[in-house]
Length: 427
Image (cartoon, rainbow, N blue to C red; front, side):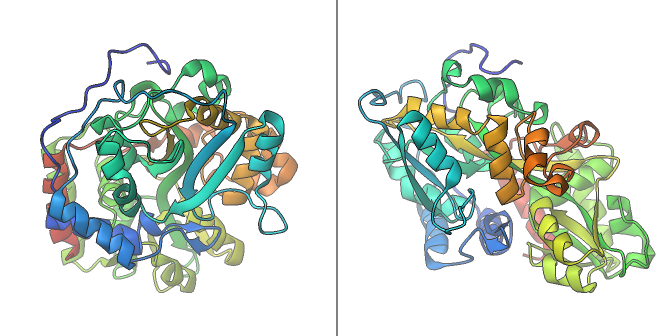
């Protein structure tokens, strides 16, 4: 499907049923906040505030009340656009997730956007984790009210939920010529937003295999089979406490696709990992706290996130990464326009601006995550040849072809799968 192919108006599923989070789902969220994707590094700084009061308060609120039913569909959520008379844009993003000038205060790409367009961007780093942020905006979105934000950046699972609830605005492709043309093929049509009708990725987050070649005696580790079964690695293997990454990579190693697996496939993957647990092959399940163990060699090999590895390799050349022949997992952080936003066209202009190769290169050079923009390599090479040649930032065609995304889950599937995974990892 091509981007923004005309479609019938989006209707949220089960509009009258709140989505109640189970205890295992809440435990998974807490793991994410303290050491998982909710705490991924941004230039060696924690992206999330750990298990802080706000974060845990957010999960508690969700547990008590469930996610409110959708009040309005995405089509009904349209509001009058004030972009013509108000050269303004309110943008909420994660901390340390945009380029910063030498003065440690300015944001060069945003400043250049303002000079070019006259649009003033009120940039707020008020996303510490997905759940906490959802707690900030859910009541207004459910009531069909303006959140005070024109553009937000959230991880794919939350983006999928917001789209399903009908709480974000469909994007106008006419305002997104660079984004339409330059979005890398591997990110073009996730199952939760076919054709990218409501979202564009800010960055990609890849789960791959990492190993310390001093700890492995110089041997390469490049498959999940080695992690789970190689006796020479026994007791020195790490798997992620993020269900989608660990199970997704295992599914791939078993010849199954994370995009379209069945319940039986999931059960078989859990059983395979359980055998490795029972044999004490796996040292532990981790968030990004694998960093110290891998760096010191206490952990010989593990599943790891690409953004962490770029920083680790800069300090320790013994740390290597491998892309399994069977493939790897990629998730995304995504830009969306909330329902009732006052400045949708201004937001779309900013999205499109970051899909210009020169601008995308400046952003990628600073944050070091997977760049979703095609045609950026030459511009990035002008800034840093090493980064331009790093496949963890710019996957080549062969690597991109091995990228897979974990399929969207129904509320019932997510509850059941998290319960099985929680039992597996002892959470």
